[in-house]
Length: 292
Image: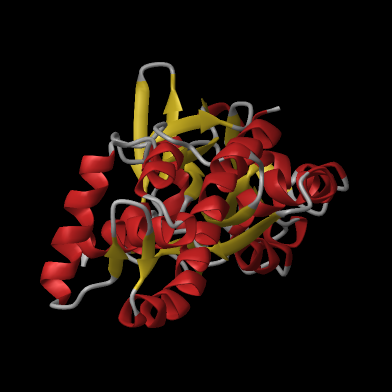
C-alpha cells in the first residue's frame, strides 16, 4: 500500500495531464520513472489503467473508474498534509497540556485571556494533575511541573521565578498549640498532608548545613492543595503550599507562617516537552507566552 499510494498519485497526474511529458515536468521526475511506476502499478492490479500511443495518453475504462474514486481521496490527503504543515508554520491547532492545579492558577490562568486573543486558532486541552507523567506514553504535547519532578531527557523551560514552600497554621489552631520553632517540633502537631498518587509529599527543610525531611502525620491528607489550605483555615492543623499563593491570607493574618528560615527557595515551575526538533508553531507560541 505504501508503494501504491505514490504510484496512484502518479497515475492521477498522468491521467489529468494526458501526457507523460507534462506529468514528468509537473512532478519534477523523468518520463522513464513515471513509465516504470505505471507499469508496476498495472502489474500489481492486473489491469491496464492507461492507453498510450506515441501521440496520446488516455485512461482506459478501468482507469477512468479508478480515477473517479481516487481523485477525492487524494484531495483529502493533500488537504490533511497541508493542515499538518500549517501547524509547523503558523500558530494553530490543539495542544494537550498536563499541569498541576496550583501551576494553572499561578502561571496559566493569568495569561490565558491574552494568549487566546493573540492566538485565536490555538486550542489548549488542559488536564489537571499533580503527578509527574510520561508525556509520550500519555500523548501530551507538553507539561508544567516543578523542576525536581521532570525527567532528564525532557526539554525544560523555566516559567516562574524562584519559589518557596510555606508552612502555615491558623490563629485559631495556635491558640491551643505552641508555635513550632524547628522542624522537629512538628511531631507534636496535626500536620495535613498533600498526597500524590504514590504517597505523601515529604516536607523538606534546610538551614545552613542542616537538612531534614518530615513525613506529615495528622488527621487528614488531600490530593488538592486548595483543600489542604481550607483545612488549615478551619483550624484542623498545619499545612504547606506555595508561599506566593498564600500571600494575601498571610497579610490578612488569616494564616500564620512558621519555620520560614527553614524553608529554602527552589527553582519553581518549568514547561517541559519531549524534543526541540520540528516544534509546532502553536507550542512555540505557548512557550514564548509563559516564559515572558
